[in-house]
Each structure stands twice: as C-alpha cells, then as structure tokens.
Image (cartoon, rainbow, N blue to C red):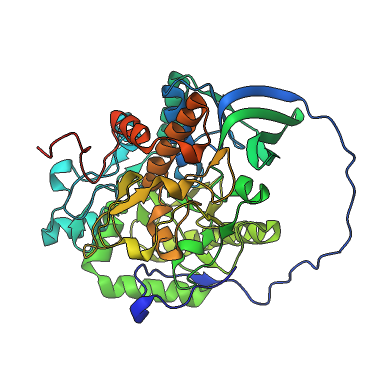
Length: 478
C-alpha cells in the first residue's frame, strides 16, 4: 500500500488522531508451499438479472433500487443481518447528509430509509436547525456529532437494530431476494465480463449467474479478483485507512458526561492524558441514540491491511482488549460512567479502506471546485464550508476495463482525500442507489453497464428522489 505525498499546499484537510501499529508485532513468514485443489463441478444455486454481493449501505440501496426497476434481484450477505458497518460495525453516527447551507443533498434511498425508522430509533437536530451557525446551538449539537465547523448538520445517530429491520423489510417489499450466511467468494468471469459469483455457504460452494453484478463488498473483493485495476495508496496522516472494532457501553449517563466535558475542559483533558499514559491508545466517548448508551468508534489503528487475515485478527484482538481497558478507566475517572458495563462489541470490524476501483471516471481533489459532472448520479456535501458540494459521476462506479459489474460504496473510484468523505454511509447509499438503477437498466436494455443511457439513468434516479446539482435541461429552475 503506497503512501500518498503531501497534499497541495502541505495541508491535510481531514485530520483526526490515529494510533500506529506495534512495529514489534511478529508476522507470519510465508511458507512458499502450495496445495492443489481438485477441479469440481459447482451447483448452480440461481440465475437472476442483478446480483448484489454485500448487504452494507451501498448493497442495500443497490438491491432495493434494482428490484424497484423490475429486475430479478438477489443480495448475498455473509452475516446474519443487513446494514454492514452502519449496523454490524456500530457506525451508528450517520455522517453529514446536508450541505453547509443546511440543504439536504443526499436524498432518495437515504431519506426514505431514515424516515422509516421508528420513533426513538433516531436522534439529531430538527430540519429547521440544519445550517444554523448560532454558536450555542452548534456547540450543543457538536457534542452529539451533528455540528462541524460551527454549523449544525443533518447527521443523525440511529439504533442499529432498528436499521437492520428497516433494511430487511425494504428489501423484501421491493421484491429482492436475500441470502444470508453466503460469502461471495469469487467472480465468474468469461470474455472480460463478470457473469455472476461463486459463494461459500453451509451448503458448500455454489454459484449464481447474473446479467449484472454489483460489487458492494466495500473492499473491492470481486473486481480485484476479476482483474480490474485498482488503487490502494493512502495519506498516512488521515483516518481513512485506519481500522478498529467499535463498541458500546451501557449503564452510562451521557448528559452528565457531556456537561462535565463542556464545563470542566481542564479536568477532561487531564482524564485523557491519564488514559493515554496508562494504555496509550485511549479515545473519547461519543453520544448514541440513547442517553444511557455510549459509543466508542476508536481508537483508530493504522498500519494494518484490510485484506490481510493476520492483520484483521490483530486489530480484533487489540480492539477487544482496549474495550476492557477503557471500561476500567472510564468507570474510575469519568463522571456518568460509574456504573457502565460492557454492552456490545461490534460484530463487524470497522474497515475504512482497502482498495479503490480505477474507474472510467474518478472524484479527485480537483473536483472540489463546484464543477458538475455530465454523468452525475448525486451530490455529496464537501469536507468543509469553503468547498462547494461535490458532483459524483456514474463513471466512478464503472471499471476501466471490466464489463458486467458496477462498484458502488467505499471502494468507488476516487483519490485518497476524496475518499475521506465518499466512504461514509450516506455516500454509500447514494452510489448504491445509482448502481442498482444502472445495473437494472443495463440488463433491461441488453447493454454493458458502461453503455447505459445517462439521461435514462438520471431520470430514474430523480424519480427515486435523488438530488442533483441542477434540474433537468427541459425543466426550469423555478
């Protein structure tokens, strides 16, 4: 994995604390030996129009969107639930969906999904507050991860179990099929195009053939195995490449803890220093959807690979130890945590980055100037108020040389700086919805995904509630 050079101007735009891997950790030496597996016939499990591999945010949106277009759609998910990192990874703080002026720009599937959460399963500022620059209001919401740069944003925190159920019901209502406990193991490739996937399950290795496959693995597992070019360079000072297992503490009093942080900053700073002196890797508690539950989304560990099984294991072991260490220190020194208990460690490892597709198009730092892409599929808020909204192109989901596949989600085509925000859950909903519509149109029209009519794609996305930089050409701005 290459390290990206210093950004233009020498300034990192998205900075947060990271903790480097232990350089003394022993790594397994490759044996150099191989074992030959005998050729075998693989049972064909099913045929479908659109096959989505991965039930995270982008996969859910893709499967629902494809099925609503009339495509026979199957979604494979290796776990027993949907939602990926937003649920199994406990990334329950959903990052910004409004821009710095308070306009809701990530809409469509994302807006519908959140609206379907039951009362009490979502917390965040009311729409009237989005874009507020009132100092007191922004400070209050900043402590609840819904205000940044002194501006209130639409960044709700949600109940992960409610999100799992809503995702499941939306998929089933759309007509899509779900296969849980099914790990998409390898793409089926003929004549330079993906024709489906081999998957592993309790029934053994099986196959699904599809008119179009959506790689929603998050790590680009399918397009990488199919031979599509990809990038894996990083900015070592940014969190976008870090990993960790998140966790929840129950039995806390978060309002009391937050008052202490706000009213006694010196005491809070001393508490953090004490924790870092004791265990080095020590992090802050975040608010959750309940006042009696605390969320920890770190410490963020750098220097590990998301596609190395030894590294994945090391991060899991270290994160679970840190969970216990944090509980002891928080119970000892943080007001509101006296009766805290270990509630849940995330069932899924929090991976932020592994591979990024080399696509027909890409989102790069140069695109942060307000330009609108001709093949726009949606709009993302920018990293900071000084930048306009970012136009996301369909070409960022389309491999340079591989047909039969689209790749939405955190492994889309972009540079490391743009990956800092394009990997977030709302952006995965945005690109997943576009991939689902694009895949369904490709199958219906009998063309490769790269040949889909952009006008038809954009019209279908608008009909599904997606937000664009400008109205269609035949429609006035009024």
